[in-house]
Every structure is written in C-alpha cells, then in structure tokens.
Image (cartoon, rainbow, N blue to C red; front, side, top):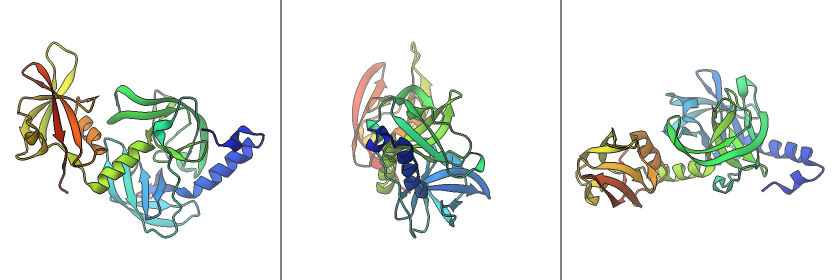
Length: 292
C-alpha cells in the first residue's frame, strides 16, 4: 500500500518527511577505517542488521549514526548463506526502524533505498519492485529468496534498508543482479533468521556431499554419515540416502540446506524428500538444536 499522502499533491513533501523519519535509523559501517556499507537499527536494545559481506571476517565494526555519533559494534552473528549479519552496540538512544511484512509485497510497488554509495552518507534512490519470491537456482551463495527492484545501488549501499512507501523496512539491500537490477533480502527472512538465532540453530545431524542423480539433470545431497542419536538418525535416515528437498524446497548443496535451516526453529517438524534405492520417499523429522 502507498502511504495516503503520497497520492496527493504534496507527494514530494511526503517523501521528504518519510525519508527524514527513517534516516536516524540508518547507520554507516566502517571496517578498518573504511566506509564500506550501511546498516539498520533493528531494535532499541542495541541490535543492528547489515550484510555478512559488509563485515567480512571482522569481529568489530565502527558504527556511525546519522547525527555523527560513533560507537564500536560487535559482530554477534553471521549467516553467509543469507548474506546477513547481526551487530550489537551499546543501547543508548537508538531509533529502530519500523519493519514491514515483505511477504505481502507486490510487483510495481514504490520502494526507496538509503545508503552511503562511494562514502556519500545518506543518499536516497527510488524505484519499483520488479520481482519477488524464489528463483530457479540461487543468488550468489544464499538461498534464492529475494526482492528485485530498480533502485540504484553502488558500493556503500550494501546492508542498508529497502523501504516501502509507508517508510517500513521491507528488505536489506544486498547486491546488483543482471547489471542494473538490485536484490534485497526480504524482511520476513531477516525476522525468521533472528528468531531462529535467538532460540538456537536448527540442525539435522548429517554428513553430506553433493551428488548428481543418475539419468537426471537433478542434484542432491548424499548422506555419508549420521550423528548418533541425532534428528536424522531418529527419523530413520540411512547412509546412502540422497536428500532432494526440505519442506518443498529443492536441495543441491550444503549451503542450500544451511540456508533452509537458518530460518527454522529447533523442535519443529520438517518434511524431507529422500531418494533411497532408486525410490522416492518422504521422511518426517523433528529438527534438533545445534550446540554453540
């Protein structure tokens, strides 16, 4: 939905007000004294969200707020398969952004990006959504769930917010795809990942290796080992089984499985598509909680 003010004669002023309202929630991140990306204040308790590729292997990141304040943020959690990172900073006076439900987005909706391209702080670009959902394959090294738009991005925009016309964060800008289209991680994926990370990481307890399925172009994951007493063993999986899907999503790499588990909670059920002895089976499994 477009904010009612955006449909009237004062559309320009309404956009200005919208951006000014969100700007305090957008930070610049500096690794090794370089302005390398953006981030979003996600909660008032000191939690920020950005891209995993922005922080890289750093354990601490410089965080510059819109008002010029600078603090040191600690990298609390990374999900490279989702290109997401959670940073922790001293709570202080933080203004969290309002988070929208990206699962309700539609093609053609107006969106805005705020970031720091080439080190220029607080630059705003606008566009429309051109695609939502899943691709047949993957986007880089993360699951192919995406928001695609024509907002203009450049180095320094990564990790910044994609906003809907009501000023709500509906995505975290991640990359350029196809030369001129921008890809963002949907906010509902971010929320699910955060929920999973706070309650523990879900796991299956399997050792896997990618394999090609004979007489088929499909690929899967060969079970080469099982953790004794783990969820997979308890569900009846056997060495030699080939995992083809989890809850309807195809699996062709260990990263794909990790990404699929990243926003599932321990203790919840999942349905595995398994190839055993040339025959397809469906196996119910209850996900376990990974240690550490």
